[in-house]
Length: 213
Image 1 (cartoon, rainbow, N blue to C red):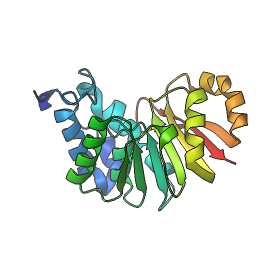
Image 2 (cartoon, one colour):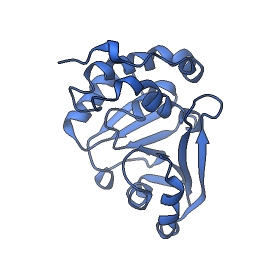
Image 3 (cartoon, rainbow, N blue to C red):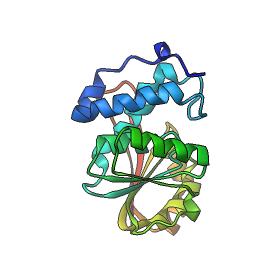
Image 4 (tube, one colour):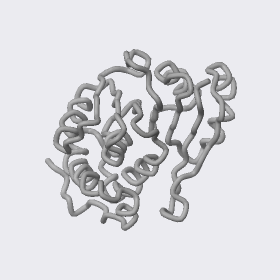
């Protein structure tokens, strides 16, 4: 049974500022996810009242950090957060959505088709098994795993000089500290935690950012 759209969070005014002329595509994606997401096991039953602010806006804040005309991987793309949102917001960037579960890759392909996103490639694989050629300019992930596990899985997919951009929670500084040896072992430089959305949203988005040396 499809989720009733009346439960969907009202689109926040910041969406227009963030997505500009791409807003209609993001709006359609949000509506599709609201309608089918719970049924397909993509989002939980309590997510509709916060779908825009917690998920879509949170993902979209990363869009300005993507390199122009780059190839960007989204690890464990799931419902397309942040991958589909970023593909919608940045049509100049090719998003490679890497996801091991078949029903989720089916959704990602179907949704990219519905939204007419020609800059999306879907790869059904675990990160450590994905065969990506050429290497990626950047890789992102959201709510996948701790940095100590995520970094070794993703660094082999990224070219030298490329970036890791991981959306993280409030404990990201503790994760960074716990991953110091992993960071050194994987030759990451320019390691930083940045906050996005200040002055735009109530709850800023934290991003672990690092360059592969």
